[in-house]
Image (cartoon, rainbow over all chains, first blue to last red; front, side, top):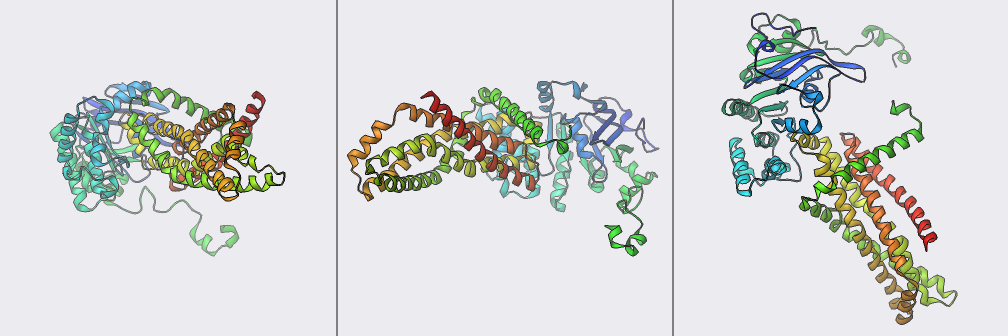
Length: 285
Length: 256
């Protein structure tokens, strides 16, 4: 497919200018199986862009392509106008310094306390005096509501708290892009609401370009400016969450309404049910 | 290349190549890692100080057994005074470095592998890469250096305690004359023997720590994968220590 099948009523986000991330005609395969083939995606400056899709559609793989952890077989992945695949490791690290990433489980360093986790990027990349490091760390922890937990170890935090600490760590270097990988998974409604609000606040207050990968339609609908729905290695629809809600495309309807069966089948491919039930046990084995 | 269809020798050569490349990566990052000595000191504590009790206990028992064995053998020839020589040479040249390395592989080596493997499975290493921090430099090199520095110190501790244990049995319990015990030991042991023990413990330090950090860093990021990597650390490093011990012993004998 050449362009994402945008919802009919609005211009696709891919058509807009000032793109910070541009993915063009990407093919990426693992063990001969194509995860993406002809993928087109654009994320614009200062907006919250959501990548949605059922489990196993390659949402996290897309993040790995964008951050230069893996490379496409074909096509182009550009971040800040630079082709990621052509960057040297030094340039790649320089690009990553302009990015913050929130991992699914927080990925806090377990041998450091909350304070040191947030201070980690500062210590690694700057020679700031300790007083300034302290100020920055406490400011970021205050922003996520966890200044009082500065001396707790990661093992003492709940899932929601760990993700908030990881968010503080992700913004401590004042990145241009913030990437959230499944930020709502496994959270209670309160924590989910807190994370949702923080994503929105970070985007508005700091002007950060935000990329959110998730399959939580309701939460994304409240914060995302642009959405891309991925299915079977391609973008099946793009637009605002509202537009996706009103889409007539079967894949979109199945995902947005949470239908068990549809273009994405409920049953894993198998032989005929009746024949297998009534057939010889040896044959079915 | 499909690893599943490769023959055992091909797999072995590939693995040796991968470990060697990883070792080169570590060596290339030792300079930058030295700029943060605090990380290395913490790992010396983790690998060294935390292994001290097991090393001292083992050293004491090994020394005491050597005392018993030596006394039993030498009294048949009326040469009980040589108990100290057996204990000193046995510990300095072989038992000290070898047993320390084996115990280290079981205690600190497994700890290193599982710690790094768990960091990988919980995406901590990926998070570092995303923060533009090289995990080999920040995680692997300090642990490798900490273990490498701790190994000869632990081997020296093991040897000293074992000598004391042998003396305790030979002199205090079996009644060998203390003067004869120590003078025979002093006459028999020269600097070459001490040097052999030091070189062995340094070589074993590289081998055990390299295997431990390699297995952890390349572990499958699953609970089963980390468990398998930990097992491989013990098996590979133990066999490697015994093999290297034979080669080094032969080499030192020919150069004496």
